Amino acid sequence: MIWIDELTEFFSGRDKTVILGVGNIQKGDDAAGALCAEALIKKFGNTILGNIKIINGAETPENFTGEIRRFKPSHVLIIDTVIADQKPGSIFIVDQQRIDNTDVSTHRMSLFMLCRFLEESIGCRVLIIGIEPKKVDFDTVLSENVQNSIGSLVDFISNFLKPTVNN
Image (tube, rainbow, N blue to C red; front, side, top):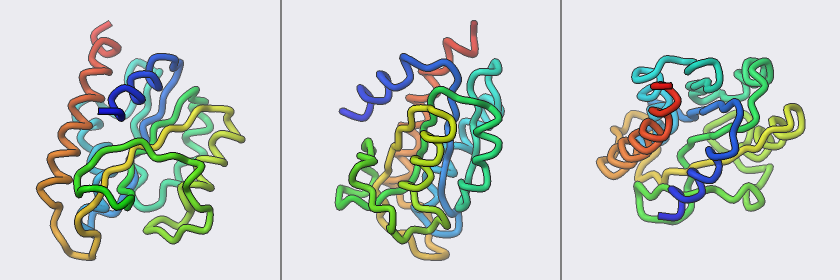
């Protein structure tokens, strides 16, 4: 799985990290990023040893840019539902160069603009993990494929963070 290798490499050079979950819990699989953040917060709390901050940005992640900037992370991991014509539940690294800054999404600010703002204002590295949705309609339930992917991603991140928490 390519995303595991890239995420491992991304985490290896970090000093301070923000994990930002993005998504609308009222729109089925669009909730994936927000649910990942909530699961990590439940497991570890919002801030881990002062060098990792977990934020549920819900459908307005831009509202948390001030908090992120004050934290001064070297790395920001964004987890979001991304439609990329893959199998529902697929986890993948999103190529920022392929994100259109005019993309219409469930968020007020496009991911392109958010990444660019964070990179330019903080000087941090930003990586986006996407989860392919099955349905993102209002009042739909989370699909089994996406629910399983959320579990896999949370488990991977948790296992990666455990040595940090235990030290």
